[in-house]
Length: 145
Image (tube, rainbow, N blue to C red; front, side, top):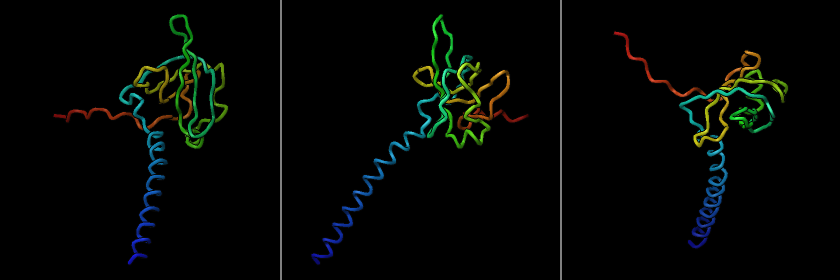
């Protein structure tokens, strides 16, 4: 009987350690993929000049300088992973510092000059396809009479 209790106690200890480890690993992963810091119900547009384009995982980043009230404000935009960007017809060389862009994005809830890229236009043409998650739901249309 004593051996049975020892085996059960050892199994419970292992289970507790595994559960704790999974919790520690899962919490940041869950937070990482949250869109909670973006205002997903609205979009904003800016026009500016690319200052930096980071082609990297887990997410690519686009930085655009915007002239505002006589000062330059740098906006940072989160994009998808390199693999997803390739599927959306973006390349490492799609944009470069100095390119003029019009960017549509989901803004930060706290007003920080940043957001989640929805689309980017260069020379009046759309670059690739949408860079963000599905659009926010729109209210259902009233049924026809």
